[in-house]
Amino acid sequence: MEELELLLKQVYGTSLDPNLSQDIIHKIEQSKAGFPRYKAWSEQDVILITYGDSVISDELMPLQSLHQFLREYLSGLVSSVHILPFFPFSSDDGFSVIDYYQVNYSLGDWADVAKLNQDFELMFDLVMNHCSRQSLWFNDFVNGSGEGQDYFVESDPSLDYSAVTRPRTSPLIVDVYTRQGLKHVWATFSDDQIDLNFANPKVLLAFVDIFLFYLKHGARFIRLDAVAFVWKILGTNCIHLPQTHAIVKLLRWVMEQLDPNMVLITETNVPHQENISYFGEGDEAHMVYQFALPPLLLHALNRGNGHYLTAWARDLVALPKGCNYFNFVASHDGIGVRAVEQIIPKHEISDLAESVHNFGGFVSMKSNGDGTQNPYELNISLFDALQGTRTGSDQWQVERFLCSQKLLLSLQGIPGIYIHSLTATENDQLLVEQTGRTRSINRHRWDRQDFEKLLAQEHSSQALVFQRYRDLLALRKTITAFHPESAQRVYDCGDALFVLQRGDAPRGTSNSSRVGLLAVFNLTKYPQQVEHLAQLPQAYQSECEDLLSDAKVTLSDYKLKPYQVLWLVP
Image 1 (cartoon, rainbow, N blue to C red):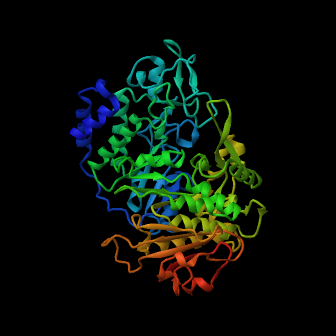
Image 2 (cartoon, rainbow, N blue to C red; image 1 turned 180 degrees about the vertical axis):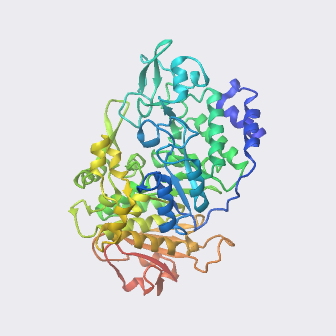
Image 3 (cartoon, rainbow, N blue to C red; image 1 turned 30 degrees about the horizontal axis):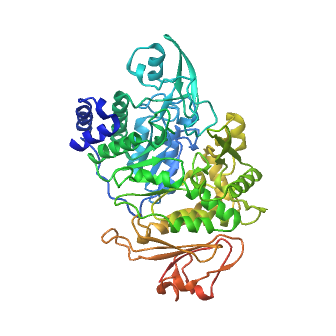
């Protein structure tokens, strides 16, 4: 109780409502009964990221079809499923939420979610910064009465907003005609996504209730979408403010009253040092999205040069106890480049964007306070982004792509695999034309029969990738060196390679006998030998076993094939 009140004071200061902590405690007590008990994270944890309708069929509702597909093909291979927002929405493919408590009727219902939860742990999104202008809350605001009448951030358009960090080029302040006349509200992401006013403690209490509701309905993992923007103070950049960090700490505290093995994840597409600030001192997010990884890896494979990837990975700071990375290399949003603004030179980001254009993708921009724009996000399917290098397309697409996925599976943390990586999905240009949104290029909906027909074709991308990926997942779960808390060390063995060592897993975490591993990645389309062998631990300088091929390998006289990966154990 005392810790909760301290956190609330960090948010509201002297204006704190003395009843707020009691109200939160009451909600927690009401929610405690019937929760499952989760195990601590381990090398068994792999999270699949998918929309509720990513796999559809004629005879089933989308959530039922997805469940059937996952149960048949991925049971025992992925532990958890992140169902991207499956609530009623008005835009942004779910991230403009109309009703936080309902399942979108076109996908299914809560019973379908519960059945999926019988076979997989679940991750839900808590879309905190904004809600749909079609929500009941916003309707209350327009009418000037009801629960949501004071839930939104009103603004004066004559003031100076140039210091505000913008992830979009759309206007920050939008006009709203209400029963009280014209008002102006804050809309960080779009004019359909109206920012909520957390300076009103009723808004915080409402989201604590939603948070607990999701946990009650099977979410072991909660992803805080766009959480960095939730607190606004004009005259600041309105991102990462102390009150925002205090709210994240508060939600973690609420979660840990129920089960310490539930996991809070922050989604903050910002430069790396800002991103990892959400670990706090081990008292904020349990995991943060590793936003620097996707552009760094794509850049390395596009150029055949891992210099920046290696330098970044070598400098990763030690993680606070109980914290880890959520690693991903593809997502529903595309590949953000903000996280590498201070890592990769601007002209090389521009070169990467040019390759994305050449491979059929798009580049989204963000507005700066001075009126200029910078690349914000590369919109392309990862499989097509890796169809070639900066010199053009080539015959190495599948091997280059699988190299990227093996690197994802090797890094310290828990891997998040986007379903369209698993299925080697190409750019969906037709969906872009239908929606008018460039992000749709990487949000294909598979008809299950069509997918299985492609699986049966020996030389289709799906046949070449899907089973090999499943085999990778089956192997990875047997290797305790891939425990999320297993130590990681990165070596500079030349720009053509990426080399990391994963250490022994903590004692008592697994019965597997395989501990300690050296992962070696050829980032190029040319055969490569490992440079600077002397810096590697002595155990890896003599004959080792490659777990990926079951071959014996001595690095001093071994050449890696183009995009080959080794998982070596002494």
